Image 1 (cartoon, rainbow, N blue to C red):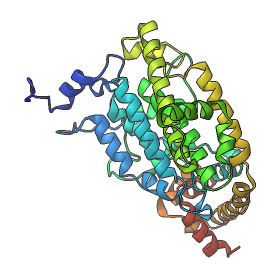
Image 2 (image 1 turned 180 degrees about the vertical axis):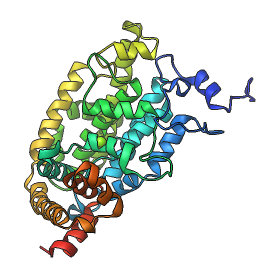
Image 3 (image 1 turned 30 degrees about the vertical axis):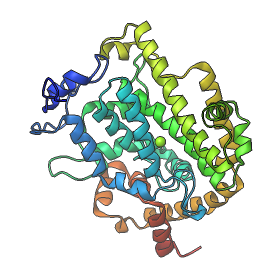
Length: 375
Ligand code: MG
């Protein structure tokens, strides 16, 4: 069957055809801080997406800890595979709500680029080390990378991303009063939560930190298991675990889509301005699902994030980071030129923090051992 009309190939016509009125159209973008000529065939958000993927900060996610480090084996998620899972879920939500998928993909791919090595252990340590000059927060660091630290173009510092991306990232640090984020940003936050609740549970069972039966006792997981049993009958444990994890994602996505569509209709949301002035988020879970997620997160915190096996790796890693920070603070001449130059305006501590935050887990370990000695 031949289509009755040829689909448009230029991005403006294409977006006008497929995006909902509550979606952020690239044609309505505020633009970039440093003006650039339009691209002949990529939309502004497609360019943003490509800039994120081509950044050094994005590539290094492959060797940064999500929860578990290389010491725990190689089954579990890295910061990069977490990011890709978030991106997939966010795209599904975006398509279901006729949102701007290019913008969603950019926000999802960039959402964790500010994380330092060693996961939250690294973040907590840097926050203490930088306490006198504003502390350290991965969301603020992502904005710093986007606006300043990535040096890829001769005309300006940073990636010069569209303002909607910078604003969404800034809103993660401090939400502007009375303004809700774009729906594109809201689906990424929701997808992030679905991804980590599910994959951390999976990784924890694989690593033997928790038993499948313990997870199945939690209401959210029990509901997913009941759906699986209705559909597939009883399964051996390994297959049950996989099916339950798939169902956990599926059910949370379905819940978000239904709730969000109902909220858009009830609130008569028909523009981006209405999304923003709505104040409360529209991409939300049903109360029972939110409560179930909180139970699961409490369980994961206690049995996984604060487990002895995770903490045992965390302590020596934090000590290495502290020692390396002190070493560069005492030997600033060994910082790479960009970081050394910025120390003049931004302070030495911040520049050392920027440099260490950009390191992968393994680079930090090797650099530590070379500078400060092994152990
Ligand atoms: Mg994340």
